[in-house]
Length: 550
Image 1 (cartoon, rainbow, N blue to C red):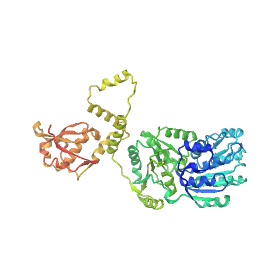
Image 2 (cartoon, rainbow, N blue to C red):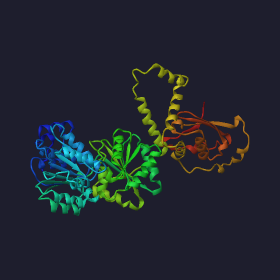
Image 3 (cartoon, helix red, strand yellow):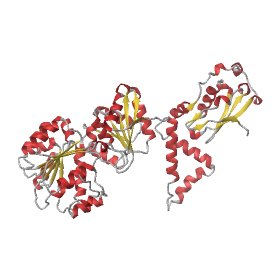
Image 4 (cartoon, rainbow, N blue to C red):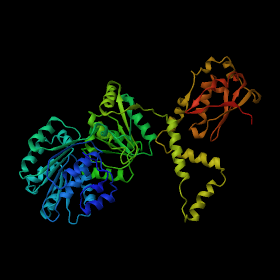
């Protein structure tokens, strides 16, 4: 098959060309290039085996719209899909593509909404294209509300998922109800036996297209994994969300109950997340999606089924909190990110007992899945502070800031020097983090990479700790750790005593500034004092402890 380089090469109406150009479509995906020229202007059955994110909606939507005669006030196209979200998304896409087709009517029906409103619509209208979930369509057919005897084209979107959700009998009834000649276009990520049965029983010599192996997984997606235990999964997830608080994505769970519980726990800790699953009402799901698209929510906690049809641009991160049940689910999930030329990350939580799944995925999908690294709380705080500071520095001043507003703030800052102002801003910002300050302090000690720390009980001078010392018996030291590292006086004192192998009572006068600190150590503990801190690192930065010359 010759690959067409541009959408403009297709033989389409001016109305469709104009809409396609406005949407920014230029180069078709493989499934689009297979379907559009094949299905436009002719009636034939078609099987498209392609994953989420390969452009399936436009692949069937463009030829379906091109084949519609808007002057005929009858229903000519029927699209069946497994979930409300997918139906809604497809409806929106068709409306955008057909915006210049005067008189075009597109209507969607699905469960979870008032059927009486849908009945009222059909009494007054015949949509050119009807989109439906199988269950709601059957309900309307049984009430003799919908007429599908004029259908010229039936589209099955995500056919394998409809079967997985138990719509087999519903689909069989719908197929048998469609007695008039029509084309059937079936799109599916997988090709199980039940799909084969449908193609043999209800389709006639279909043209088949399968996305090539190298096209299955988006090359713009990086794949990583973490080996986790049941009791630390949620803690790791919180770390990942903390470290990616500037990103948007989806966290996948296996069950509806687990989805709701995880979302509730994260929401209680003020994470900007929201659940989406099958037990929610349509109004609840719509409210969640509105918040997500308006950036009020950064991450959706979702089941695989509920996530079908979610099409939000520029998702950066997909987290498989629960491992997918099969390879197709992994591809469906991961395909939510790395779209339109943007980079994405797919991160999978893996139980030790299922570690072999990593190699299976690598082999089947021809991808490389690498071990992810989890930053410490301190590293996370530093990255978040850096992003916050950069955004703050780039904030444009208001042109007409009221003088009284400025003065009311300036009064409190005017006697502080620049360093003091920054310290106060940083301290205040740290308190807004979901991470508790105690976690940052604990992380400060965990961050230091060193040789085993001797106990202060090993110090030969320990006995002198109970004595009273005068000023001349103390020596001042400098260390390149400060407020910006998220450490307090008590944390620093404890670290110095532990690393130096001395009694905490022999460390005093700890003073912390923005990037460094000073402290006094009793002269009885000076031997090898600086040597015990040599080779230590905080992240990538070498730790320095020297005598204070000031």
